[in-house]
Image (cartoon, rainbow, N blue to C red):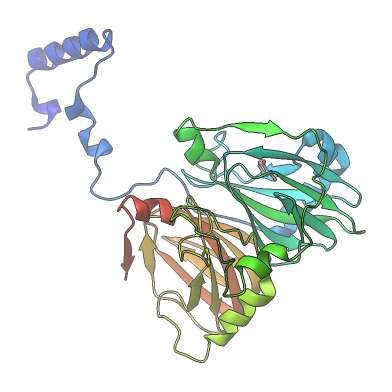
Length: 348
Ligand code: GTQ
């Protein structure tokens, strides 16, 4: 029986009751149960695509209005159109476009939020993580694990732009955020560039290194050159019908995701290849690194080209087509969902 079919008296009694318990900070489950425990995810987030040409123009304008030093981080937040004001691109993830101009420094700080960077544009910048610098090159995937000191600088003569991905909404949800600024503007290098990659990223590990299962990787840069070589290297096989040639980034010491809250992926779609629709419970941010094509999310369709960013909310069917050989980077909260036994994928 629907509530509307009740006699007016019964309806009034209920409304009255709800009012009385409401004033005591209680509310009836039966009015909200369907929304609280839905038959499948109904994300409040919307699919969206940001064109890089527009993003670049807008972030360069920010470069004329405020310095990296004053801003601390000169970033335009990519806000999901259906979640405005919440600084998030999916319910669990934050994304932003960061600009650093020649000669600038984004000063050293650390926070419990984990960050990733995907370098999009320009040469000559570095990111320093716990005392080691890495030169930022297009397509490089760089991580800043929770509570590691980090600063960025631009020693070159071009503006450098990258995409930031952080677990800010997850940490906010858990009320577990801490942050502090360093007294040093930029960290003095403690080790030469490439040290971490040599120690932890060459299919070998230091003799006395015993990582715990959830430790973030000590490899803090995944150079695009290596990613591209891996994707090309697996391309003689048959592409997966739903994902093309796709790999996940890992902590090479454990096989787990690079950081506990964020999974990252790279995929290659040969020209003309179209994926079958697939949906998964992790809302995912994608970046086109090479090529161009079309993306379909539910009933929305966009063309994508280099450096465009698009978001696919939880349980929205995704279909991709490459019109030129395409390489896509993506990230999501998949490791969190998998650790909790919640992650699902449906291949259609
Ligand atoms: O580069 O440390 O987009 O702390 C947001 C918060 C970047 C960073 C962001 C941050 C950073």
